[in-house]
Structure formats: C-alpha cells, structure tokens
Image (cartoon, rainbow, N blue to C red; front, side, top):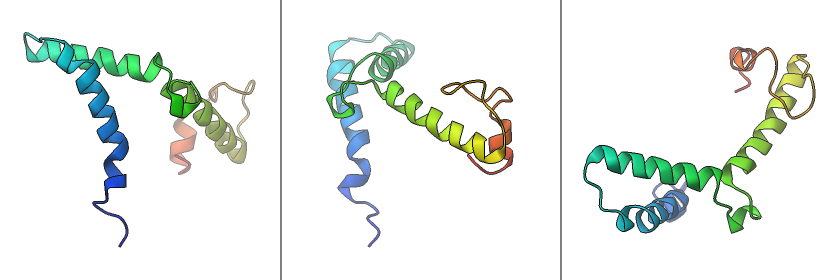
Length: 104
C-alpha cells in the first residue's frame, strides 16, 4: 500500500476548510455567490499572509514558504552559474532559466 486514500493525505486540506467554514462562512450571510467568493478570498488572504500559526513557530504560511523558496531558488541559480545581486532576492534574470533547465 502506498497510502492512497489514507486519512493523512487529506488532513491538512480538511483542517484548512474547517477553519474557512467556522471562521468565515458560517459567520456571514452571503447574498450571492460573488459575495461568498470575495469573502472566502479575503479569508484565505488573511489566513496565508497575516494569521500566525502555532505549528509554524508563530509565522504565517507565506513567511515560511517564501523563506524556503528563497533558499531553494538561490541554490538552483547557483548550480546553473547565475549570480544573485544579494542573498534573499530573486534571480535578476528571472525564473525562466530555472524552468528551461528542468530545475523547477
């Protein structure tokens, strides 16, 4: 068994949608589908960019993702011979050379 269909596969998505339902959807009375879309979009932006998470050492998911992305991007660009102007910034030549060379 490779774990397909196992409860662990959907655990994080189920937790996210539980938070969306209980902290946004059930508290609002949406008048239309577009209002519901805007509300869920606003909540997901808040959840990912502003809300600190205990499991992430009181960081936002965006902070954790961007920190890890910078490290991976810097390492990938260094293996291709591209230079960064300084650590922690995106490659000045853009992301294209990474995807062309099969790095992303």
